[in-house]
Length: 462
Image (cartoon, rainbow, N blue to C red; front, side, top):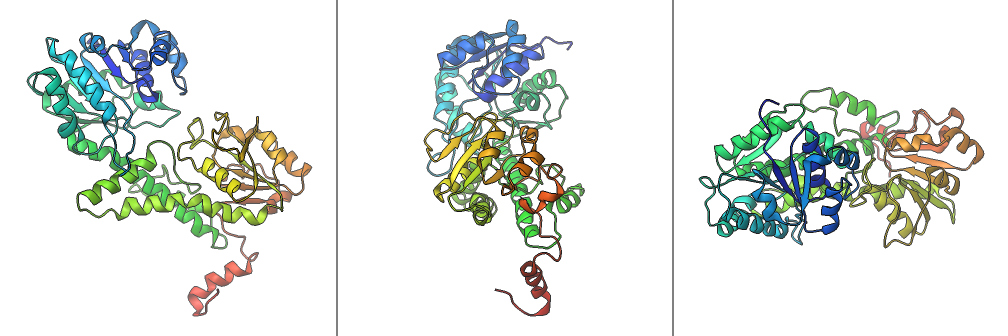
């Protein structure tokens, strides 16, 4: 890097903020982390992870010399050239994003800018709806600073496209960087900085603040629509003798207009971003008088999946039997159970009256749900359950000796939402291995054959 990287400050030391501190420092940049939580500040200052995230602690520790942390946003702004704001924007009762924390952060940043000489760029990274940065937050900055955006300071909206469990890697290797800018000078400054930080030299897509705000939630909503379409195909395949969703989606993904990523039929999407971004886009569309059918349908289809799976597994559970859930987080390599399908499935089974025992490598407890017993290992779940559901495609579940478990317990049934164990189930136990996304073997299910035939013979099957 020929030019020295400017020092930056990051307001908010949650999963993304703390990971950005670590990632930027790992690329040789100096970073000041800011948070209102003294414990988070102390952890980052000591080179420890304030939150759970892959490689966060080791990366912070290895680059501690380039990292500072403080409770004082004014100090951070005065000693940096660019400030990123990454604070919570929770969903409100309407489905929109509340920006109270961002407004408070902008108030403090503005107060620091009032007495600071020289040009400074403020970058909002938190997810917001179109209009928020310009209409709601820019006035806070200008009022608190007594200065004008453009001639006196820069303002950008630049969200990151990352996944929990791989935040550092994703931040340093994005497909592109999205820059909404108040003017060209602010955008030039941020693009130049990203060019120094991003390990893969990703292209920048620059636009107005509003276009960038809309692009952010549109990306996530489009991805969830793709996931939901794959899950619909999985349900169809289950009703068609010989059908296999993996074969179908592999063909679809080969089309460059579609692509294979996120096109795996199984359980639905979850986590802290995907579900709420869909709801927010639908809210925005309704509020502005535009059709909201796409995101509304995607959300409605996604939330019904646990009930569909419970209906499939219920006949497999003996009276007084136990359901084992492998995977409570919304994805592997994460401890987040927010809107997670595995957690929802466990709760639905408990509500149905089944005894439920569950395990996830990173989830140690389910606060507030006494109906779900936590196990210490996947093997413990397999040993205790009558029906085991593989709810996330976590490689940890491959460590179970499935042939031995199935041989030891002749009544054990496995329902695999992701076909993760397809190469681990012995032929002799195939009848006890149920998957989502595959139809019955041709000739083995007369009802399924009849329903398909009835479409073309003019008869009907109830």
